[in-house]
Structures are given as C-alpha cells and as structure tokens.
Image (cartoon, rainbow, N blue to C red; front, side):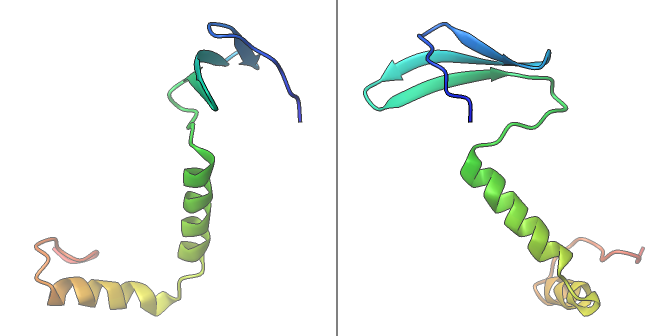
Length: 86
C-alpha cells in the first residue's frame, strides 16, 4: 500500500484519468473529492463489498428461482408484464 501525506487542496493522480483531491480535514475525518471519467465507477468500500456479494448471490441462482420470483410478483398484483409475455 502506498501511503501519502496531503494537505487540503492537494491531490494525487491515478493514471491519466483519475484525480483524488483532499477537500477538508475535520478532527478524525478527511473529505476527498474524486474526478474520474463517467465510465469508471467509484464506490465507498462497504457499498462495493455489498455489490460484490449481491452479484455472487445472483450468480448462484437456480433456474427455477426466476420463475418463483415472477410468480410472487404476479400474486402481489405487480402491473409489469413478466419476461417473455406481451
């Protein structure tokens, strides 16, 4: 891990496209701003971990799970048409 010291207003660069700027320092909190192209997602670590867990869970779905979910939606009166039906 690279550890750097920065002051408010100073930044670091990651490749050509990403800039991380220290915007404020308050007691034990550091506020940073991140400039990056729109096609590069930037997440807080806890949100990134949640997305990864959800993706793994979705990848482990069984073929009948989708049918079960669609049946549940129909029972709840969901106005959307299930996949494959017009």
